[in-house]
Structure formats: C-alpha cells, structure tokens
Length: 131
Image (cartoon, rainbow, N blue to C red; front, top):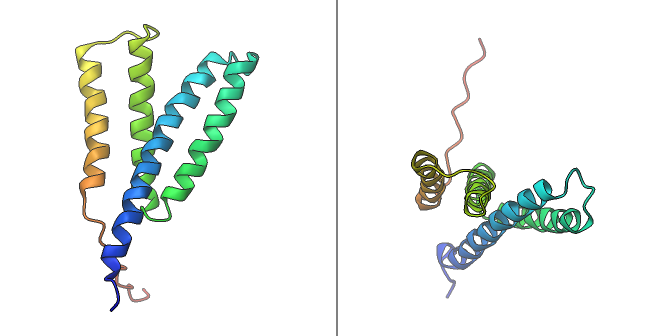
C-alpha cells in the first residue's frame, strides 16, 4: 500500500519551514554583524557576517525546494528584518516606539499569514490568443 503523497510531504514541508525560520534568524545575525564590521575592517564581525550569510543563503536555498520561492523569500526577509530591528532596539542602537513596534508586529503577522495559507498549486493562466 502506498502512502498518500500529502502525508509524505508534510514532514518535509515542516522541516523546510524550520530551516527557513533558522535562516531568517541567521539573516538577522549577519545583518547585525555587517553593521558591526565597520566596512569589513573589524575581523570578528566580518567573519561572523561571512559565515552566517553563507549559512542563511544555504538554508533559504534548501527551503525553496518545498516552499514557493516568493513566499519563502518574503518570510525570510520579513522575519530577518523584524529580528534585526528588534535586536537594535533591545540593545539601544535604535530607538523604540509603540508605532515602530506595531509595524514590526505587522511584518511578523504578514509572514505568519503566508505560512498559514494553503500550499495548493496554482493553475497556469490560460493562453491568450495572438492579437
């Protein structure tokens, strides 16, 4: 008896989302390290940047095997950006404000919304007759 395709895809898709989330965290790390590298003149932040940027890109590449590229990229950027600015506010590098926190929550909410959408395949658009 064969296992239904959707049952075998679920664990792979869940793993892809976890990899994507980890990659987004690494994006925040490399963005922060980039800021601390002082134009790549500081060795440790430059090394952290290079390592985490590479790992983040590899993770994104792995995630898009199961998650549509547009969705994966939007989630990766959104979560990474929210974490980066959140860290900057938490460490006092950037001022926090209720409105800024609201907009960051909006970014995270939109990324979560993309995860919650059904993963159905879209139908190709009907070809238009030549004009």
